[in-house]
Length: 439
Picture: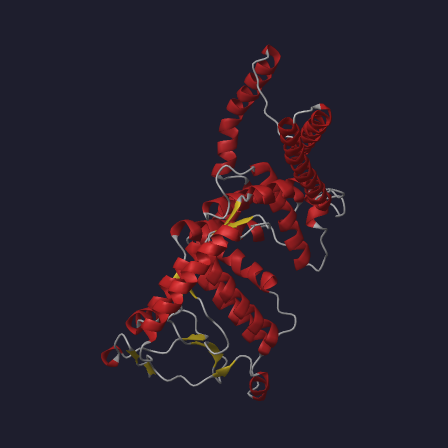
């Protein structure tokens, strides 16, 4: 039986009012030097919404019932039942389910439970929430995520639950499918194609700003995908700054990445589950555990049944599939398109737009040095004028002008030094695939 403390809502009102002021200040002063454009007020509003829902115990009862429905076909997950007839917005009555914390390793070993299996179950249950149902427990700490004597996971406290918005859900699914597609030893060609899908998913989820430099983002995606897959097989990756250089600097400075407020609670839940998993199994790696889960989920999205899956595999093996037929039909049109493009090149009607980030940065530095040089020259002119004029007023004005432009030159010089220092951090000394074996 859960009874709400008296005056809790009033306490929330006061604390959240102060937190809103803090969020507004963070929005103004957050330098966002890591390239992520965070909206602190939006994060605050999402937190406020969930906190007020958390103290509505009838809402918590609904959350528990929905969570139980989502896991009804998973035999190792238990959710206490709700007694609605004796529950109110401030009193919640639920079934008593005896369990122990997943961090109580000594007791788990005493009961003879498989710690590695328990770690895998915590990861699978978390992935099911984030990827499949898109409705997840925001606070699965060791007090809310436990285990019974039979090795079943037991969830408690459903006050803080959240659901991914449709665009975030679809984008995140696309992201996961692209990231795990092909397995750890995927070829570079396939990985490049998957990187485009991954960027599409990130954009749909609202993490990537519309109009961002797609080429630079896809290059960044390929780097992180290869690093992730190398980690799956125990290989070390290269440094992102020395590999991507100017591309990474441009993306960082333009703040092309967004931070949806819902992700705050996803990361919080992930951190809790990851900590529990590593406590149970020192070799716990949710990246490795997610591979078979995501592959199974992706197959389930592609095929409505095992029969259809087998039939599609047969079609692909024999060449009797719609994709190959479509390729055969559209090939003449593609050849005609290539011919038209070549003719446009011959006639001089084809325009190709390219972007050189290195040249852009060089021009940016030239602009800064030009301002510095102009300020120094003008300061020198005013000093010379002050030395030759006899009028005290003109001399004073000239000295003031020299001081102003001297300050401007000092500020411009500081900007040039800061620019050079930033450039030095992103010097590209390695290239994609240069230190890796070919697949």
